[in-house]
Length: 288
Image 1 (cartoon, rainbow, N blue to C red):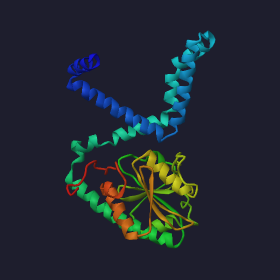
Image 2 (image 1 turned 90 degrees about the horizontal axis):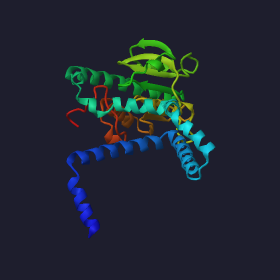
Image 3 (image 1 turned 180 degrees about the horizontal axis):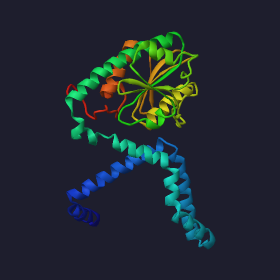
Image 4 (image 1 turned 120 degrees about the vertical axis):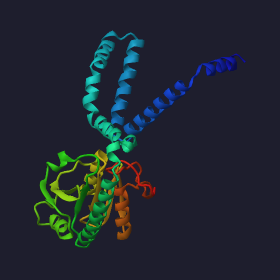
């Protein structure tokens, strides 16, 4: 009875602000754990926990020398953590910047620009689909990146600027095995074949299949570090895949590939298993 009365008195003191506060903190902790589990930070966190346990044990058994060393370590660990977790922190900040909070940003809700983007997107998707079919039949590998909200200036600087109108012959020529740009990625930006021969970051995931080659690892790495949509054509098997948010999906039906690529770029990813992807305009179409 004492416990119940104490619980009742505690519940009376809880306000709506307290509930919201707890909910927000729980939400942040959940996503922090999720990010840590999906990256190399998980192993680093385990190491930090072990060091913390060592510090408490040193204090418990009065090990002065060990306690002093670990205490000094934690005083400067904040700067060390910023350096060690720099890729993860950058990824988190980019995800916050691409969040749905900004879908109602006034400059993003321009219907004319959205309609123009939709038309350009459909045109580029049709050209890309026809190109990858030809590349797949000829067993020529390809890596095509669609820039979206995250700017890919650093990646573009690693390649050669093209700024050409998209066409099937142009894309096929870029990935022709004796062409100088065929080993890198082709960046499509603002409806143009913007740059070729670009170097992409490889995925650091330990769960990727060993059967996947460098192109697929680069596609997943690019989609993990940005909101870009990456199309891959396997040189060995001719298999065509799309990478979004670190998820790689392969296609046999080319019509399905064409439709789903268009849906992803125009922002209807949930229907095809790519959650959390936003269009460059940051909002969904009314038909959704």
